[in-house]
Image (cartoon, rainbow, N blue to C red):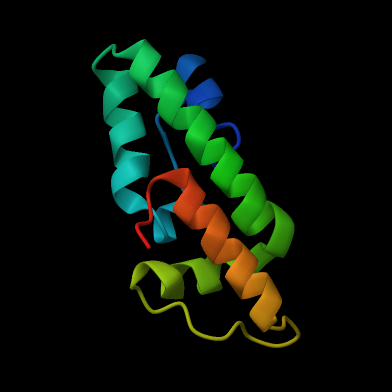
Length: 111
């Protein structure tokens, strides 16, 4: 069984799940893999801390802005997210700036 969201990725792994297909992995793939490896290698404190950081980010990125948030976040970290397909709209300038501040606060994105 695979998790479909960072919001419950670690919980699923604890219950015997085997992995995840996480939208946040499009933005922070290294951190998502670090979480998986920390869990798989029995580093539960590290996994819990990383999971909480990713859950918080997931709420701010896709939980708040959906597909547009994931795509904008990809752009902000140096990947190519681009413009969402219709009927979705991209983020406004203010939303994008707010999202960038949140990503910077996460410690995963450096200004």
